[in-house]
Image: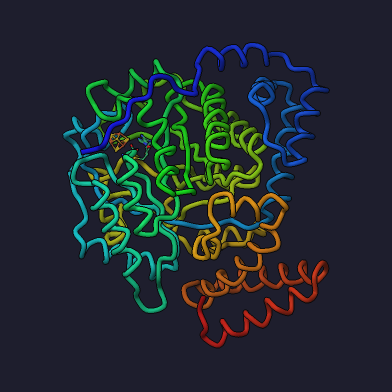
Length: 468
Ligand code: SAM
Ligand code: SF4
């Protein structure tokens, strides 16, 4: 059982958020341009500034916000995009979140937890497609305690088939106590992700029945503080958009970021902004009045990008290919592809509604998505070098802040992409990828010919069979 800690008061003040949003209404265009300029100087925004961006309605000014977000993404992250895959381990759950297909009272779901053998098999399939980073996902249940989760992490790292290996395992599971997180740290976890779902206290109470563990707002809100106390310094926050008013949730994400920065000296490694999807035998999707349109989704992504310039942003395969194509340039740094979210879903390569939490919008294979990224001029990266050499938390930020993602991450990305092209890509993707690598090398030659030479030498070694 958890070592429960109670929190009397928390750092999300609903009234303060409403007041900031109210004061932000009808913003002066000159002030908005100053706020945009501050973001472009790569400085994290203050809540009153983000509130003003959230209240912009003028189409021309909105276009300036989108353009600035694209520019900032390009300047900090370049055209690199990191790929991962989700791997659902088990769907048993003691909670009853009204919107989720895995909720305890949902009889339409077939409950299943992967055995060690099945887990290995799923990992081998993912490795055979070229994946190097996974996020393991679990319902909340006593059988998914820290020891169990640590064991699944070990199994994933140990499972190596042919040239395949998983180099970074992230986790999306229920909040734990400090002792539990220490076990995960010991097992070599990458990022621990917890989505607050909604930052609004009243709505949270309504959607998470109070007789369940998840009913405790503060236990969840401080879940990542405990992770950081335990030494996990890459943490991911998120809100499930569609539960409440989207502007409120963006403010909640910013307050959460500021709280982590002020308490631990480093903000979240990533922010996720899933939109609610339909789930089997679940009425919530049809009933909620807070669903976010594509147009508002663009604003969410751009304004988060401008508010927290250095935080990674994740866009999942919940979204359709068309939406992903439009949103990625606005600030996204990580996407998943070839994803299946049924328990055991990679074996059948199938849609299994009775085992899925919700429906995915992008069911294309990893190879297809990578090919599309090449056509857009985006460089696929499977790089995990920072994590493996211990550059996490504020040490990663020390690289990100002086603009070194371009200097370190793009070259490393090229090398991991080359490995993918040789070992896993279809003929078509390989051709498109090789062309893209040529373009990247040309760009590097213009700024740093020495670096280009060094990358070419490493590419040659990869051609000869050497792997990272
Ligand atoms: N059970 C753990 C928890 O709730 O934190 C972790 C895994 S849960 C399966 C992962 C996330 O799925 C939740 O945090 C929630 O944001 C998201 N989710 C739940 N129902 C969803 C739906 N209908 N559409 C989209 N995302 C959903
Ligand atoms: Fe369980 Fe998580 Fe789904 Fe809630 S969101 S019902 S805790 S799996």
